[in-house]
Length: 247
Image (cartoon, rainbow, N blue to C red; front, side):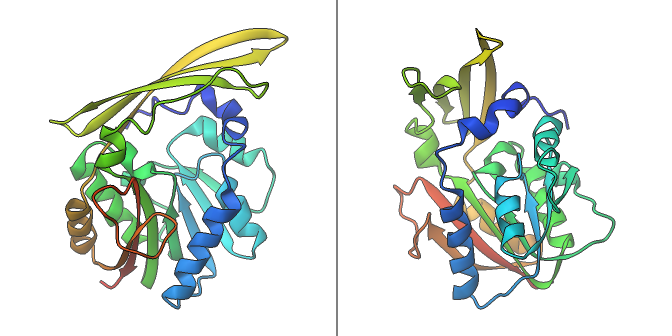
């Protein structure tokens, strides 16, 4: 599968995400694990990007392997010279030579980037093949409410913090695909440089995801409104899934 997103922005991705509270995301994952009484030692971080969560998990003592479809993002992750092992892998074709993990995670709405439902089902199946019996898969998705209500529309053009950016989104109700036109401005060698990326996300329904997980041999343990421990509502913008591999 050709990867066309997270290319030029990869070099500046950590600067772009500097305000993201990665520690809070990791703490939420660990609170979920405590809640379901699961104590993993090995972690597979899928769509790991530049490895920010992978690195934090490794610092906490987990044995972490990261994988991402974007070679440019993995190049940045590997440059951090940590003990985390990184691979360039398409989740729908995931193959780590039969290795199995106690926990798989995929954060920051990465599964929304898989536009074809059949390919998403295959990705979930491949995740299951890389988990031990009883292993846990935790992931989050942007909901249709978020994509349809332009939650992606953002701008940072006035601060001293680069990259500057303007994002504008369009949502297609028939395909449930959100197209995000991203314009970035960075400073290279004292000069302003502008580039664009177009990102696509699909709104996968909770019913679709539940069926895909069940078909792949998972038991859906919980579905949470993001960062909380309550069920999502029709106005939830982000949802976390917690699933256990049972077959």
